[in-house]
Length: 120
Image (cartoon, rainbow, N blue to C red; front, side):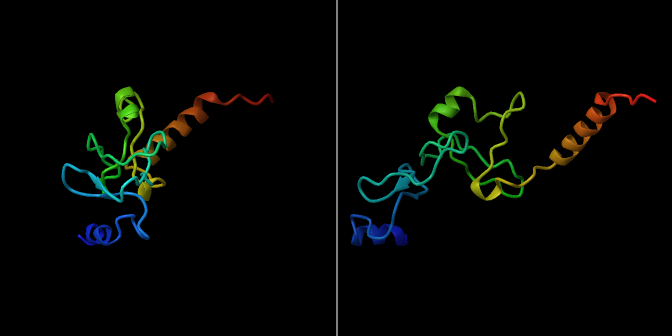
């Protein structure tokens, strides 16, 4: 596409910085020596490979998210035992379906059982 042709014209990258995601075995393409401007969503280390094909937990989004090899091997990307619900950058503040009910239910339970009785 356009970025590929631009990099052919400007092998040093010109104004283009970072790596461009491509839909083949290369996974990313950029000028020689380019570093990733993207990062792992769980630990923040610079990362540009969509290895594992993890997806955003927001049902209306489901975009691929970046999770580094280290986080994948440690299981930080798995949603078990209350683990993380992976979200892409656009959906970081978006509440997942059912989260509001869980939070409200937990708050009501704490208020009902955790309060002290007033002395009269």
